[in-house]
Picture 1 (tube, rainbow, N blue to C red):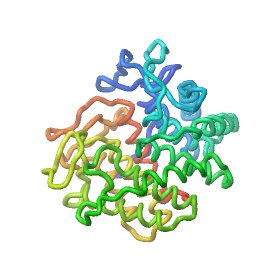
Picture 2: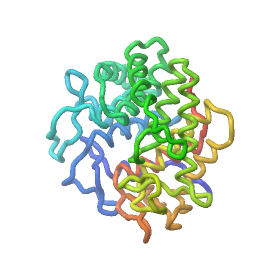
Picture 3: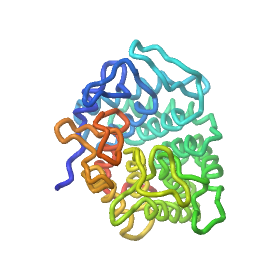
Length: 339
């Protein structure tokens, strides 16, 4: 089967004037569950890295930027939950929603073809980058945005300082066990964002050893999450040394972060492993996975929410659809600029 192009049709179906609904019942948005900044930040990433965005994609990018800006507090921290009436709920935090918002803002500031989007995104990236998170994944997502800013504006102090802090937090931990080099006792979620951020920070800061450490960790993860030539990724409950495999419920976000990291590695580290990794990620969505089942709906362009032993969860939520779009974007241009 040929690799499909990314489609934004289902994402448009899931989106109203306020934002993209988080959940779906099959292809129908579940409006009662509202929206989240995590998803809107990812919308900003995938729309702003489209090389020739249609008007639909431009409109989605503007909605995503507005949502992420409105989620940001005066001090740069972030709200995550918003109901279908537009009301925000919960506290401001520097959890994943903060990190992902900086990823989206940094990507928009560097890559949007809309001057106003770039200007607004940079201003709010710089506000958000005043904060620091104690959580490695939040800092890793933030580092991805900071790397994009540095690529576009090499002397940006806010981005460079954030990258330095992220490198210290994400890159310092080690298990000391050669059979389990992962810096945590168990794999959790979106795991490849950790080596991805190490490589991003290392490239931006001129620290080749950090690039090399991130690439080595990514190579281990890719091997660990491959079985008989196809991806067999960490399930929603995580996994540790000796856990039985395959395991379910496998999440599309795990596959998408592998594709993201492999795309960066392909631009930084010689070897064919990284393009092969992107190919495995695309193939996982197309059906080369532990259940031998497609993880997307060719009719809608939506991604399925999780892979179970008996096949896919057929709901087409925002996170899974964005993971599909992101992975297919990398299949067009496997090695993205990283210097």
